[in-house]
Image 1 (tube, rainbow, N blue to C red):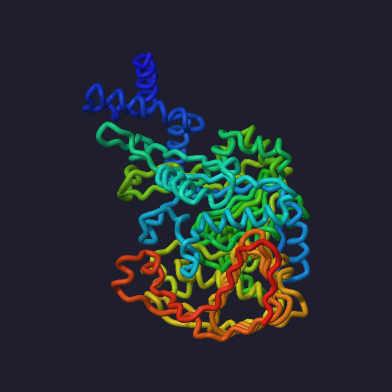
Image 2: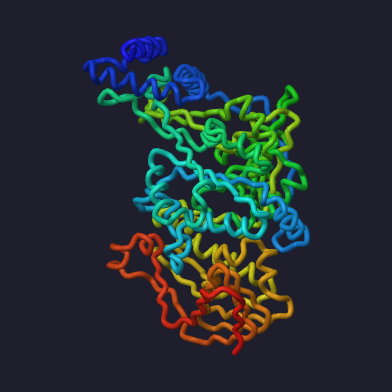
Amino acid sequence: SAAGQGSIMENKLRSLGQEHLFEGLTEPQKASLLQQASELDSQLPGGLAGYVETAQKLLKDSAEGVNPFSGFQPQIPAGEKLQVGSEAFLEMESVGSKAIKDAAFVLVAGGLGERLGYKGIKVSLPLYIIERERCFLDLYISHILALQRAHGDGRKLPLAIMTSDDTHSLTVELLEKHKNFGMESDQITIVKQNKVPALMDVKARFASSDGKIETKPHGHGDVHTLLHQHGLVKRWQEEGRKWVVFFQDTNGVIFRALTAVLGVSCKCNFDVNSVCVPRTPGEAVGGICKLVHQDGRDFTVNVEYNQLDPLLRSTNDFANGDVADPATGHSPFPGNINCLVFGIAQYKNVLEATGGKVNEFVNPKYADSSKTSFKSPTRLECMMQDFPLLLPPEANVGFTEIDRWLCFSPVKNNLTDAAAKARNGLPPECAGSAERDAMILNCRLLSLAGVDVDMQGTSGTFADIPIEFPPLVVLLPSFGTSLLEIKEKISQDSKVKVTGRSALVLEGDVSIQGTLELDGALVVRAAPGAKVVIQSLLVHNAGWRLEKTEDEETMSDDMLKMRGYKVVRTETREILVTEPGVHTISQ
C-alpha cells in the first residue's frame, strides 16, 4: 500500500539523519515529501542511502582539506598532435571518414542561456547572425546528416540528446517545430537527467522548504548513467557501431575536427580520446594529465584548472606549477574541451560493471571558518570527462590535440564578463567572438583549399569587445564538413579570390571549377538534388557591412543585443537553385 511504502521511506530517511524534514509538516505535505523521496531514491544510482553516504565522506574530506590527488604523480600524457592541413591531418580525415558510418553522437544540452542574458535554451541560439534562423541544434543535426550522406553507407547515424528539467520541454518543442531539422524521428533519443537533493551542512542533511526537498543539477556526468539506463549503448553495439562521440551545446565549430579525431581513435585504437587544444597556463580550461599512483595504478584524465597548479607544485618535476613549456609557449598538459570519442566495446563493458556512475565531488561555499555550514545549499556533482577513472588498467586512453581555431570557440559569457576577459587578454567566448571565430575558420578552410582570401575584414569595438572580422564567410554543413570535403569542392586549377570586404554564403552541392572573383556579397544555395558548378563568375557589388547596433534595436532583439553589431545588406548577388540536376554558372 501507499501508506506502507510511505512508512518504509520515512524510516529510511530517519535512519539517514533526515528527521528534520518532517518538522511542522501537515499529513498531506508529509505524504507528498515521501512520494518525492521515493522518486529520488529510484532515480539515484545507489539510492538515497548511497547519495548520503558519499556526501558525508566527500564533505568530511572537503572540510579537512583532503587532497583528492594524494599519492598520485602527474606525468605528461600520450596522444596525437595534428596540425590542420598537414599530410598527417588529411590522412586522419581520410581514415575517420570511413569510420563515420560506425559512429553514434551524444549532445549534452542541459544548459539555459541565462548567463548570456537570454531566456531560452542555449541550443536554440544562432551561431551566425546572417543565418540567424539556423540555431546550434540545426547546425549539429545538419553536420550529422551531411556526414551520413557522404560517408554513411546508407546507414542512419543516431543522435542522443541529454536534457535537464530546465531544457527538456523547450528542446522537444524546438525539434517538433522544425521537424527534427531533417532527421528522422527514430534517429533521435532524448534522455533527461534528474536533479539531486541539496545539502545544507557537513552532515549531508537535505535542504527543504514548504515540505519539499530542494534539488539541484548533478552535472553532465549523468550522461553515462542515462545512456546505460536507456539501453542505448547496448543497442548501438548490437547495430555494429564502434564509436560514441560526445559534444557540448554551444561549441559550433566542433564538427570540423571530428572526422580527423575519429581517424586518430581508429589508428591508435583509443578507448577514450579527448579532443584537446594547446592550453595557455592559467586559463580556465582543464588539462589532460597522466596520473600515476604509488601503488602502480595510472589514469589519463582531465584535471580541473583550479586543481592543476597545486597538483603540479606538489611535485619535484613541475615545482613551478602551471607554466608554459618554453619550446611551445603552451602548457605541456593539453587543454580539454569536453568533446570525447569512446570506443563502444570498452564503454559498454564498463557501463555494465558500474552503471555508468562516475566519481562525484562536492564544492561547498562555507559560511565561516568552522566549515560546518554553508552560505547556500550545495550538492554532489559529477563530470562526463571523469569516466576514464572507471576504466580497467589495460584501457587505452589518449588525446588528439588540434589547433584551437578548428575545434573550439564556445558561447558561454555575457557581454560584461566577455569584455572583462577581453581586457585581460583572454578569449571573450561570447556570441560575437564565436561568430567571428567560425568565419575565420571558414576562410581558413577555403584558403587551405587554394582560395586567395584577404583575411582583413571589418574591425571594431562592439559592446566593449574589440573584434576583428575576416570576410563574412559562412560554409553550411551541406557544403562540406571536413577539410577534405571542402578541398573536393574547389578544383585545384581553379582561380578564386575573395576580398576583405566580401560576404559569401555557400549551401548544398556547390563546386568551383574555374574562376570566381568576389568583391561584395554572394549567396549560392543548391537545394537537395541540385548541383551548382561555378565555371566563371565575377561579382562586384556594394555588399554587406557590419555596424554597431542602436539601443532601441537591441531592446527588442536578443540576438543583436548579445553581439552589439548587426549586418546591413546593401546589395547581394543570389544564386538559388531548386531544380534537380547540374546547373553551370558561366558568364
